[in-house]
Image (cartoon, rainbow, N blue to C red; front, side, top):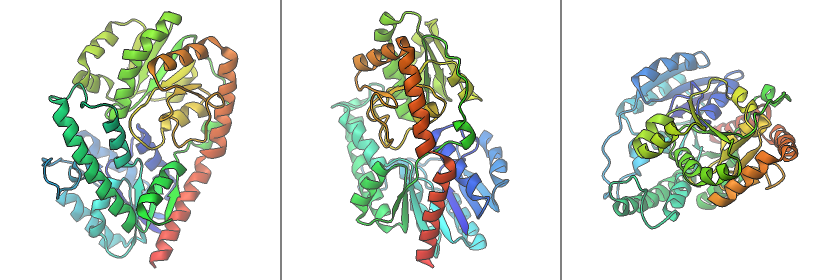
Length: 409
């Protein structure tokens, strides 16, 4: 089978959740099928990464993304996060690659890339919802009457957000209905897609881990050591960190004064400096906080931590960080939203709390109870081995792509 990937980002290096998932699909599918890749890079410094992608592809091309200005008030326009990913240059690349490569199926690796469907005639079109935009935006609107505190005018920002939600709902509904097949990241999200698309051409392909990551490993957690992980250019991750340190951490340290917070992930200083400079200054002054930034071996860091905090209250999809923590045997405290799409239960594989006091209470409880840590660690690993082994997950994607290509033929 000949598969063309059209991507809003370069999946190498696989530093964020979506990048890791796409990189796994690309590298594993390339063992049995011919792959072509066309996508964006965000900075000139990233352009060289296409060479690593090319090692697994018959064709690999990328273009620098240069977002164009967006008119909020035009009801005819696509959503901002779609129009900002339009490029005449990328459209030409897709047409040229499709003409020469002649794919059996084209997988658009995020819903905003579905706008390029008209650039490819003939092969089956598969839309991928790494998250569902209209769900994420509806949750953002539900957070309160005003916009975010860092917005120049929160009320105007909220009005803009309402328009964006309506545009996104219309855009994604049309995309899902017209797609030959849709890939969602959980059965929960697949149900939403089926409801708005009006068909059953939907397959849930959750994030996974490699078999070697499921091998039992010795952990050496340091008492009181709490890990927060996130690619901070993804706003829900930054919001989760600000909630954790601003509202949860003060409660926690009253009960566990020796607690230490380790923040791992790219863009922490840059994004906090832009949207929360006062909090960044506080964290820099706090001897109990370490901003580690990008960590090459995240699993080694996880082995030194007693618990991972993931108090996420925005976004949609499945949180790779929660799956990776459970695979590493690191107990997790998260929110109902952070656990969404996973076959987990409170007290069985992880702990769930949705407010600051509750999150602090569960973190304190876990930090003080080594038997609870051990029980959640074992149950989390067992669930990931059963539900998120990449050997089985990528086969599920492969079968969906083959069905789409066969239906089109």
